[in-house]
Image (spheres, rainbow, N blue to C red):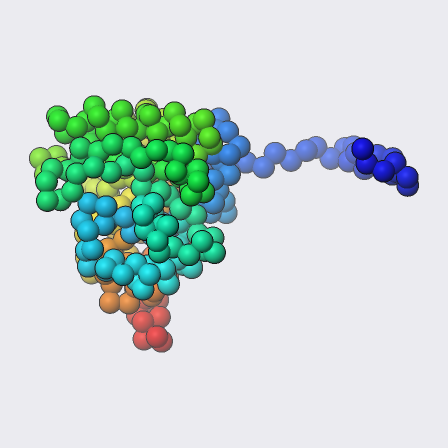
Length: 292
């Protein structure tokens, strides 16, 4: 029991001042539990509801691809500029300093690689995400893949069940196979299926008509950066996606394969959080690169 000596009687009731309910400006969050919202608030800046995720999970299917041969040298120095890092548990344990406070979106499924057949994945033990203090779990969904569509959707809703139990949000990642058309009609289907099966966030690709993809998806969409393109084009991609309603960008190769990765990630961040237009962001990239 607390010591009752010098006990101060309650008096600061704030009568006449209504309690403020602090919301969170992220689409589809109203009914989520506190823990899920708190983790999402670590990933998406509460000031604008946007995020710059730094993807470096490519090795789980591609091995040491260009730019992530040495994650300790290429990715770790960039974490200070990212809102979140998307990586695998192996990389997290081996290479990401535990003193770093960047939130982690943990790649939570694995299976086949580029040398066999993609999309035949299983989900890791979600308790490992808890041990690793993950802010979110990412699971790939292969809508339109006749062999693995049902399996990957099952992976998603199984992960959502675990996430709901422990308060960890889940990001559904739309996989696009060689036979799938990358158009707005397909992405409206794929993103909506992810959301309908419980994904709190969906990662997908930007395409013409992207505003319709965002409009019919009830949760935030983050776009994938995709393959390496010129820096000016990548900045324009980020700008168009945000302008069309995306809540952020999960960019990997267009950052770590850039000639000046630190300059590039800062320029992308300025597009997302400061609304810089592509030409302004590209000038910022050039200035930072020159000042290196």
